[in-house]
Length: 129
Image (cartoon, rainbow, N blue to C red; front, top):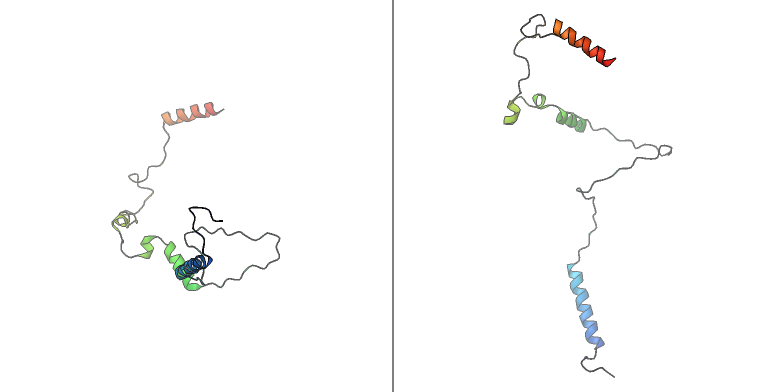
């Protein structure tokens, strides 16, 4: 009692097609046995609970790593003897050219009071009250 327009399904032929499909799929599959974290994914480290009894991890300090870390944090003038880029050339020599002398009025502009500044100071004090 087959319907017109439909072919009869041959179970042997269907089974052969199914087996061939599985073989092709298995050829393309790769078995991964080594796993690692994705370096591009942000890792959220959660701290332990404050009342937990678990002892903290003991981490051995690596002196070479700590020294390299501190060296990387130094400013460029301490790391290198000469500027490495053109933009570092600006301001590379940061020591003052002249000796700082507080008694020299040409370089020391200390705050001075005049009759105008005293008047303004009094006006500001009255306004604040």
